Length: 500
Image (cartoon, rainbow, N blue to C red; front, side, top):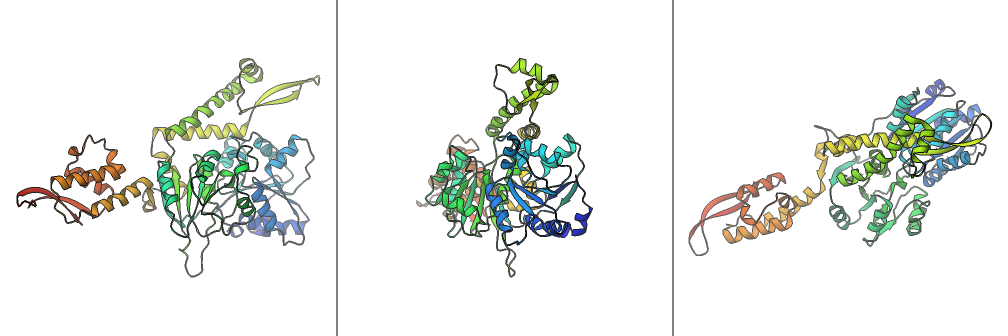
């Protein structure tokens, strides 16, 4: 837990102006540390804490955590509220400690919120405060501080533990994902994360599914289930639906402890967001059984089409950004005056020496850094088709030689189950030409694996092909050739399927 790593004596070492980075998995006591050890320090020293949150639901959960405190030295605010105050030139009081909870927000939301840079610049300006950045995915913040801003910081890390993952599946098609949802075992629930439109559409396909998105989404919030919204405002102990279809609005800090949620499906490209989505499901352990709260994770293996869409959008923006960096604001204005200005470039009103207002163009640093690293990731994943899955596995502590038994391709699992059902019906039966044809047709009809072989007719499916398919699916069968009498008493070659 965070409190075991950061002691009271450690806090005493911190000085005004320090940057404190705390990287710890969901459920490792980040908020508890603020509520107990840090708040006690502030009370004793008559100091004040500001705790920033990226989502309203998380802000309310943090407020509830402090509701029993008789004396409070902490204020709660959304990043968006802070940004609005900065835009409106409203005064912001002094704080001795500023806690940037789920600080990955500064980068993860930058593609669709150009104001996250205001948060960063304000935090950077608070040199009389101790600035604490907390997240389970803090890599972007660290890299930005090191390589872009050249900032020194104190870094505290708790090792992640993903033992609660029963199975990590990758899937290629939405049909396979929907099969999971349609065949949920009795008493089990699922959460599906994707884009707003896709999540809403999926919620309409299942009877006991509900949809939830940000209240700031003008197009889709009217479809969001208000009962679910009320549940999420507090710690979710019993989700009121079997399937929750939602977006990355839940990716920050919302606690879901319903043990019936056994399936988490994520159709999102960004790696940090995947970790945050999976982390919404808090894992609990009983004293008598530390293995009873397991979940299955399903990650969409993002294909070339999705990567191309993101790459094209980001590349176009980076082209303008690089031109601005290399040529300056005036040259940029001349070149792009009659074009649509990219969201990565911010027009800023400034004054010259005479006090005359003018417009300058400046880079949005958060967007630029986010796009830069996203394009690098996409480029490497396009060169190596398996790299995306490798990166996801690494996020959950799975790498070559360690934990790989937990990983499977969802379509292959369904292939194996279907093949098993087909093969067991033929075990011990002499398969002559007619029966062989029925077996081939059954395999062709039910197995994804065979269609990928580009077979040009059942006649090409030899006994070696069938055995190869069985071996690839790790099934306990073998097809052998022998001579036997058919129903007319004639000696003929035939196949027989045996269990091994």
